Length: 335
Image (tube, rainbow, N blue to C red; front, side):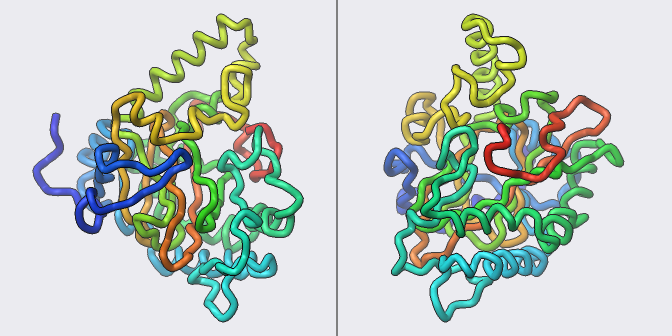
């Protein structure tokens, strides 16, 4: 059933034919791209709930106050400044990468940079360690992650009410221009110790241009995600894995990173589906279900702006959920 006639903004400046977006396995042709459809959080909840069910995602414009997002962004880059990642003479809130530096010395975390959620390498120790420690700072863990605007909206959308619980484990990730992008995956891969009922909020912490390394969603990817999960369970059983082994995202039937694929272009071509993309503004949020397949583009921001975003997840506390996510994120935590 189609959505109501009010048009949802694509979030795209100009024609898709004029965009050049790159992923880990090359450029995405216009035929592989489509617009990520935006919704106002002020629309009736039943309508938003239907969109979430139909699309597997809900792209909400301006859900969190912009000044709250920008304050957290400023604190983050102040915290990372000692690593030398920022261009001298620029403001921390702008998050501008120093182009005189080698971008490979500033790798992201949790983006398939290392197998089994490991450390990307000693050469990047200061930068990676500070990025990890940022998760534990009050301005992020308390002031930002627990801002009521997001949790209140999720509780209404899902109908969970007071049973709505936010995971302590979050994924606060930077994407320096030119670095490896996030590979193809769906979240239930990493949440198999609980029911597939969680809601993820991908929150860009700052404005993200179309070429700035934002997240992208596979068209009707949530239906394919369910099919992929069923296939993995069948293969795990056939290969003799125990139930416990099959729950681990890093088992013998998966890539060492837990991803479906490192190559979004090949993946879209194989399944004949488009990647849905948009520009994002500070305050925007994309909610998605645990089977929504997503990835990111390589950050080619013309102004060398570092893309910063976080994943915040919510569950119905009255239902079985993956309690491994009840503690702060650490490298090599097996999740």
